[in-house]
Amino acid sequence: MIEARGLTKRYGDKVAVSSLSFTVEPGKVTGFLGPNGAGKTTTMRLILGLDAPDAGTVTVAGRRYGDLGFPMREVGALLDAKAVHGGRSAYNHLLCLAQTNGIPRKRVGEVLDLVGLNEVARKRSKGFSLGMGQRLGIAATLLGDPQVLMFDEPVNGLDPEGILWIRNLMKTLASEGRTVFVSSHLMSEMEHTADHLVVIGRGQLLAECSMDEFIARSSGQSVRVRTPQAELLAKAVSHAGGEVAGGEVAGSDGMLTVSGLDAARIGDIAFDSGIRLHELTVVRASLEAAFMELTGDSVEYHAGLPVAEGVN
Amino acid sequence: MLASEWTKLRSVRSTYWTLLALVVVSVGLGAIIAAATKAHWSSMSPTDKATFDSVQASQGGLMFLGQLVIVVLGSLVITSEYSTGMIRTSLTVMPRRGVVFTAKALVFGVGALVISLITSFTAFFLGQALLSPHNVTLSSAGATRAVVGGAIYVTLCGLLAYAVGTLMRHTAGTITSVIGVLFVLPIIVHLLPHSWRDGMLRWLPSSAGDAVSQTVYTGPTHLFNGWGELSVLGAYVVILLAAGLLLFKTRDA
Image 1 (spheres, helix red, strand yellow):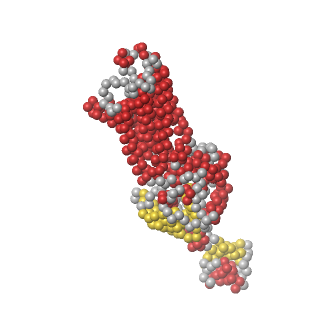
Image 2 (cartoon, helix red, strand yellow):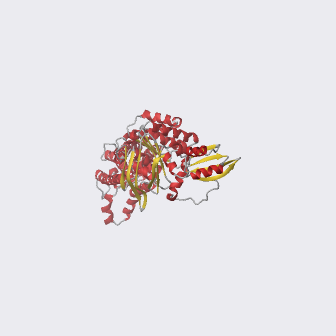
Image 3 (cartoon, rainbow over the protein chains, first blue to last red):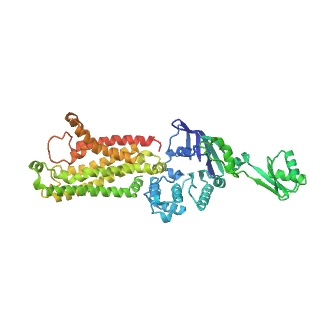
């Protein structure tokens, strides 16, 4: 369990995080989303005591991070997989971390097996690929078998197999009752992994709710209907309060995109009016669309490139 | 925690390179000075022969270049953590920064002292052997003080670099500053007029090296005795370590 109350941090006259309050609960994967510069990394550093907040508090398992007796045994954090001494072997790197918290040597071998680095354990980490470095960082978080795990962009540099592996790892850890807090930019991946979301923009909280709720709130949710009696259905649906967009033709059928009514309601309307349906699909907005909608005006650093045609 | 810092120290190549350099340079240079002096003995003036300090000759390598090498290692022990970003990992797994700082200083200090003592004694025995019959033994006046004190001096220089490293957090800056203090500062002071120079000499960190290794009286040096000068250097190290600890604890990682 991670609890933040009124967290504020300034760097010079720039406010990185402002009155941020949220709770991350055990047993689920909580995604931490926000545009670049929103304050995600700052927030994570505040949780871990790497920076001191100007105001507010944040506790992990009910205590300040600095007050934990053996921090590694309660919290495993991966903030920057490159923050290792390249001249040191993977084994020795994990060993020196384990020794700070009284974790036995054999645990080092165990986590190396877990992440699949046992073959390169004795090699210097500067020769590692991005993916291997990332896995080394994950191994370090698991050393103390902690109840709380925090990952800042863990899928950076991983191949599809690696990304799938991390997704399963995080879900397994959450199912074991642990608290998993992940920040990521990869919306498509986050959509499959996270159950709960904390969204920030410009240092402030924008949303804190379940994944389903977040997407449902956005305007992108709609129902796609294919029917030979498109005009009829369109009228009936508008009459019932739905909004009809679209009007493509697919073969001899018309395709409608309806928002404001759920699929069941539309099906009932069609049945009541004797309209045949050939397709009735819920088009769930993507997390990416919902996210862009919410954070559009909170983006600090816009790229100046035009959006390609056909990409929404 | 000590185990962790020891693992860190022994698991990087730079440790072994610097310690090897320390031993080779100290013993080697001392041996060269000794052998060369013996070879030229007959062409030396009577004054030079009378004031010849055989201990200073054999320990010259350690005292002159050995301190340079240990400064590099003392700096790296802390500044490499900043340059690689490892410091964030280290302080995340152990947020009690006082513990980290002290453990690191202890492991380095003890290690440096042990290696310096071994090097110092080796340089002495080899150098003296090469110097014979103009040599001295450990039991002669000031010899043990020079050998042991020399090792302590080198260790203190290393800890000085460690302390400056925690303050500057930058490898090149730290090494340059400490070498400046140990090498350049004495040169500047020696160029000053007598009245200023004589009062300042005893407060230079490098004077501890001079005082501790000199066993033949050649006139007033304006320094405290060997242990006195070591205490002066020791005091500087303690003050800088305290400042380093304070900043280490309070600055953002």
